[in-house]
Amino acid sequence: FGATGLAGMALGAILIGVSAKPATVSAATTSDGAVVVHLGLSAFSTTAVMVPLGGKLDFVDDSNIPHQLTYGVWNNGQTQLATPANAPALNNRAISSGSFEIGPFTTAGTYHILCVIHPGMELTVTVP
Image (cartoon, rainbow, N blue to C red):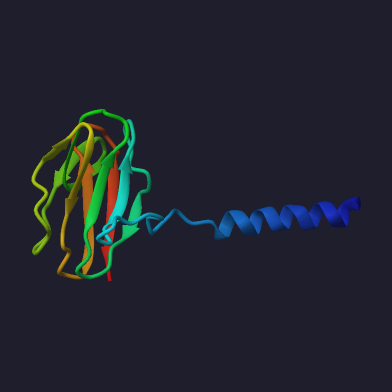
């Protein structure tokens, strides 16, 4: 195989690693076109999603673990709560099974959602 082949494989692996980015769009949507985000034990299924202007977001709790969602971010183990102007209602919404939908997102921007129970559990929603 030789040094050239090994160098090529190493370069290929590096290029794949550099080009790989976290998911920015959820793969699934509901029948009404809402972007689906699954909640695991202590994390969202993705850290970032894109929701079209006027679109909705559907949270599905697959873990049957209690979560409490609101707007904000985790910073050094502390919550920094902040509800953006014109954001769909999401005031400490509790979920421990099943699903719920928020939206529509009628204003373009970036929205940060966290679970106040699980440190570091954050989701960035981008509305172009």
